[in-house]
Length: 169
Image (tube, rainbow, N blue to C red; front, side, top):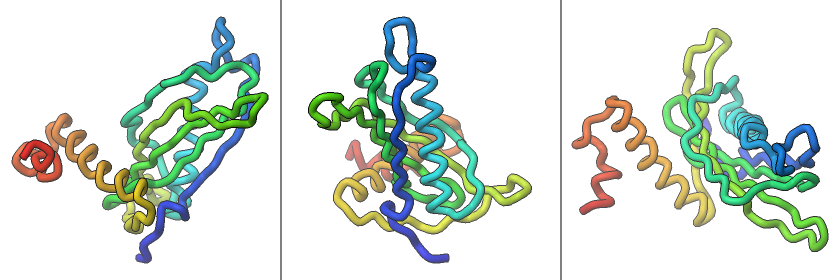
C-alpha cells in the first residue's frame, strides 16, 4: 500500500452563512458548523484512504469566534495522521472579511474517521507522510491525542503511553 501526503487529502469547502442557519443573534449555529466540518473531514479522509469512511469521533472543537450571518466560511481539512484503519483529520475554519477580503481564523477541529469495506468492517489505510513543519507538528501530536483517548477509554495502560510519558520526563 502506497503512502500519501497530507496535501493529497486537502479539502477546501467554502460556503455562505444563510438566515436559516443562524441563531437569534444572527450567528451560525454551532451544530451547522459541526455538520459542515464533518462533511469536509469525511471527504479528506476518503481522499486519503480511497475507501468508505465513517466518523468515529469528534476529538476537539474550538469555537473561538462567532460566524455572523452573511459570512463566507472556508473549511480546510487535511488528514494529520493515519493509523491502522483510522485517520485523524485536522480542520481550520476561516471567515472572510466582507470588505477587505482578509481571512481570519475562526475555529479549528479534529475529527477521527475509520475506513470500512462494504460490510462496515474496518480496513487498512495508507500511512501518511507529513511534509511541512505544521504537518509534522500535527502528525506528532496526533499520536499523543490517540494515546490519551485510549487511556481515558481504558484501552491502554498508562505504562504503554510512551508519547504521553515523554511529555513529563
